[in-house]
Structures are given as structure tokens and as C-alpha cells.
Length: 246
Ligand code: OAD
Image 1 (tube, rainbow, N blue to C red):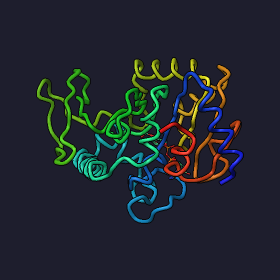
Image 2 (image 1 turned 180 degrees about the vertical axis):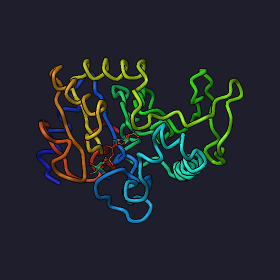
Image 3 (image 1 turned 30 degrees about the horizontal axis):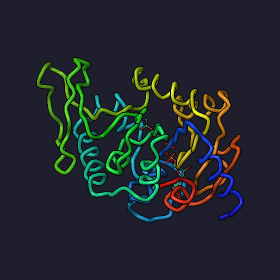
Image 4 (image 1 turned 120 degrees about the vertical axis):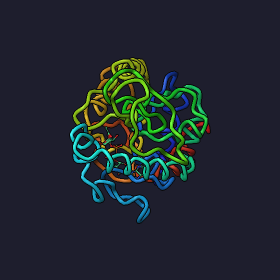
């Protein structure tokens, strides 16, 4: 790790008034939660998900219409694995600084369990189910004993995880909150995301256009770092505790 880059990042964090941490699956990789793309440090448990299933088949309205049982089963497995995971030092570092708004693409609850107070989950959360038919029913899920496929108690629809699937739009209220935070920050930490999935990845452009400094933290060079002011290459769990006050 380049010490002068770390010192620059530390100075940017110290001087910033409003910080957004825009995170992705790499943030939870060291907790053993699988990422979607890219290489990971750990083997089996965090082998990229895309190598083990076809996302368009499972995480999509079409997949749910075709094979709802398999989709429900797959989410039950994901929920159990998230429940078994523990927040890592990167989650704790992001949670420990009250200036940080955590805008995350992650659907796990590890930032919550690390004690972060301001979290915006642009791709939803695994900890709730909602009615797929759209009647508005929403209910918390027991992550240790997740449900299988079940009907909505309020209408003839089926319940599904409260996450954003391929081909779906992001919840407008959550998206607006994310855009507002990114447009108002003076520092954005881009943590563990390939920044390939839009519109979420566009939040980096919004922060940059608003004049924020962009610091990328990733195990791989390139990718999200296109026009970063600073790129810190290494595991988030090692880098973030050294550049934040946590
Ligand atoms: P990806 O799996 O695309 O990217 C994970 C990134 O984390 C890669 O750039 C890795 O290099 C990096 N990484 C892995 N381990 C790391 C570590 N220990 N420390 C730091 N970086 C690490 O995950 P996302 O960018 O989150 O959307 O993917 C974005 C979206 O794609 C997801 O939210 C999901 C998927 O489609 C939906 O489900 C709607």
C-alpha cells in the first residue's frame, strides 16, 4: 500500500464536511458474502455469484414468473448466508463516522449490524419481503429461518424479496435520497464496486459533477477508478480503518 496515497486519503476524509460512501459487493466480500463480478480474495464462499447462476434467470421478473420456487429457494440460501456473516472492519469503519452517508448497492444488512446510522440501499434489502403484484404489503423476514414461496396475505399476489431485479426500476424515493446525498457531498468513497451497473454507477458522476473528490477503494485497479482523484488498491477491510476516524 502506497503510504502517501493513504495519507492523502486520510487528509481528504479529515477535511470533508459531507462524505458519501458508495459501496458494492466488495464491501461485504471479507465477511464471506459472494460478490457478483471480479476476483475475490477468498475461495468458495465468495466465488463470484455470476459463475454459479444465471442472474437474468433468477433475479428478474421473468425468472420469478417462470420458476418462482427456484427463485424463492435461491433467496432463502442467500438470506441464510448473509445471516451467518458478520460485519467486517470496513463496515465498522464506515459506520463509525457520523458524517458518512452510506449509499450502498448491497442488499445485505451488514452496515446496519455494524451500527451505521444513515444507510440508503438503492437496490433494496433482503431483510424484507413485499407483494410482487404491488398491493403495497411489506413484511420483515426471519433471516435465520427464511420463508419459501408464499402468497401475499392481502391480495392474490406472491411475496418476493424487497430487492431490485434485472429490468426493474429503482424505488424513486430511495433514488432521490441517494442523488441528493451525492450531489451534496464533498468527498465520495467508492468502495468495492465494479461500477458497471446503472443507474447506480451514475451516482459517482453526480458527486464528481458537484465538485466532490472521488477516492476509490478496490482490490483491483481500473474499473470504477476511471476518473478518480485517488485509487487505493487493496481490501476495504484493511484500507478503510486506516483512512477514517473509526
Ligand atoms: P461486483 O461484484 O460487480 O463488484 C465487486 C467489486 O468489489 C469488484 O470491483 C472487486 O474488485 C471488488 N472487491 C472484491 N473484494 C474486495 C475487497 N475485499 N475490498 C475491496 N474491493 C473488493 O459488485 P457490485 O459493484 O456491487 O445489482 O455490483 C453492482 C450490482 O450488480 C449489484 O448491486 C447487483 C448486480 O447486478 C442488483 O442486484 C440490482
